[in-house]
Image (cartoon, rainbow, N blue to C red):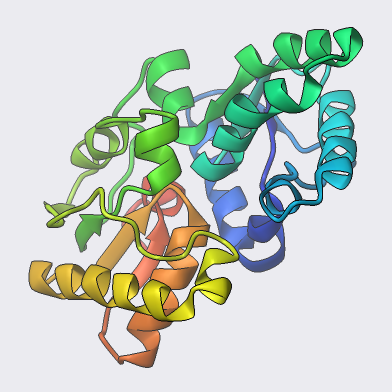
Length: 242
């Protein structure tokens, strides 16, 4: 299968290893991956901040870039939630745009959705001899209803010790510009999340969104907590060497 990778702009800028890991996993499973150079952003940051015309322009660009893609893999639940929840609203009233959205969206998959629902696999041949706890991002659990897909994938990884995270569905406090506009509330939420992570004794915190992991990882680093944040794709790509 030919799979088009939409990497998410912050992954491309800050977490390039995530995209490489997605490619490693999917190629290991026998698929061909393409990266369309024209891709940019899903438009979430603009839409959530009130820049609606700009967000529509970004959406149009996404639809044009991926209009003939067979399958689109996105290692970011927040990006997929933006597409599924808001693209139809943004296209409403424009029949051509509505049709373009309706045509592309069924081919968009969050990474763990793609593995389990489309490709039908849970064991991707990974080995990861570390103690890991799983954070479930808000968009993943509440918008996409990803459920236990990430956990099922992690449970199939050889050598891993997966420890449940208390209140795993509780927000980490990032929320994009929420963390800036409501810094005190965000910091309090982050502290609760870090306390829950500390109580697991895990050395790795994982999730399907680097936006959450960036926020959590920053707090853990400032506290010298001895816990690293690693995107689930990087765990699934590992064969015991990292």
